[in-house]
Amino acid sequence: MRKAELVIIGGGPAGMAAAVSARQNGIENIVILERDHVLGGILNQCIHNGFGLHTFQEELTGPEYADRYEQKVKELEIEYQLETMVTDISEGTDQKASDLLPGVRCIHVSAVNRTYGFFQIETKAVILAMGCRERPRGALNIPGYRPAGIYSAGTAQRLINVMGYMPGKRVVILGSGDIGLIMARRMTLEGAKVLAVAELMPYSGGLKRNIVQCLEDYDIPLLLSHTVVNIRGKERVEGITLAKVDEKGRPLPGTQIEYECDTLLLSCGLLPENELSKTAGVALQQITGGPAVNDRLETSIPGMFACGNVLHVHDLVDYVSEEASLAGKYAACYIQKAKEEPVEDGTKAKERAAEDGTEAKEEPAKDGTELEAAVTDDTELQIQPENGVRYTVPCSISPDKMADQVVVRFRVGGVYQDRYISVYLGEQRLLHAKRRILTPGKMEQVILKKSFFQSVKPDEAIRIDLEEE
Image 1 (cartoon, rainbow, N blue to C red):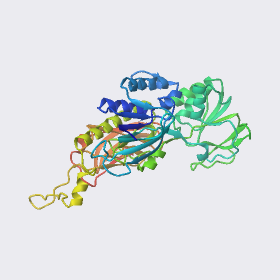
Image 2: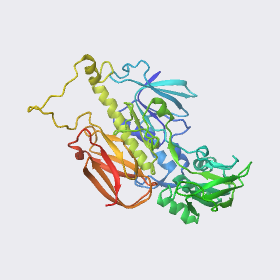
Image 3: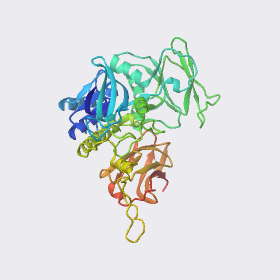
Image 4: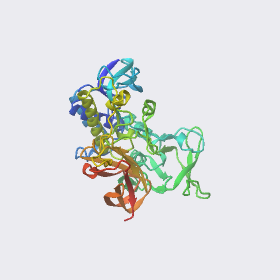
């Protein structure tokens, strides 16, 4: 059993940015655990440009962007373990205060690699930064055999950009997420013929700029409200059948289109990689599949934070780095505060007071009436998505603990034109901003200022919804 102040699971852009931020905020003993043989995560296979405009004010490729953070990790002498698989995260089995940090229950991170075999790290805090994975064919209910030539878009990207293999020559892509759109262009540039990109929904799941640059610039058709209804071929894909679907996603008879092809790429959505989060007991959001976090990016387990695509799928890596930097900062604050205010038995002061019968009672006002509710250490406001807003990150804020402002990011559930993003605290409208167009492919955000919450009632909630005027 070794010890560390902070363990970061994942060495991609989120994990590295969080580590750099934590070190810059005073945490010395940091360990990054990464299952790949190099740092950088998925960016190592994203050789196209378009990264870094927000973070570095210049356009970089994926490997260049990752290298910027890798160099920072090395300059700050942050420890990282490669080819290391984390198998479990759990609270200290003795349920007592950690000897590493009196007053904070330790977290045990179990992992395995070739150098140390199976080992455990006792840590004060953990940052989850495991990224996301693609939705596989098995989740799509596509009929037909299982021949060679069916790949996820990310797998095809790795085969071409990292390993130097060409998946096929005549290609159909199902799903118009950003990876699928980028791979339509990449396959074309490598000499393949991309026959069509089909999308089940009546709108694309990718950014508008990728639709223009990856499809329209190469005359690749985008077929909305279409899906694959058959795959032909036993040993290798010989062709696929597309069909138009109704509003419930059911194929419409007589709308079939036959394509002779040898490759089918699937780009049907990304899912936060949260198997570890589940086993650790972290509460997950139903919509995103990622952890439910507060404005400090802390999960339902104290001392465990989450950031990047493991939290929710981002459209720009710059936002991943921004979010991860905050997670590193808040994890550092958590550790330092615990150092300053140790608790001998590892329980919260309020819990001890309740156990020994000395719990503080609310003092009545001088006139005998109850004091009007104000913002206290226990005030936590839930953020409720409504009227087209699918989810928000974070899910709640604590006005007394929040920074001067909190960025709340979200996605909408359809295509909307000329709508207002409105934010309410109870019946009071805090923000009202017009958007010409809102689409699921583009992540939106609002900024909530601390000054908005000077007086809060206990039963109030923050609502974010879309309004026509």
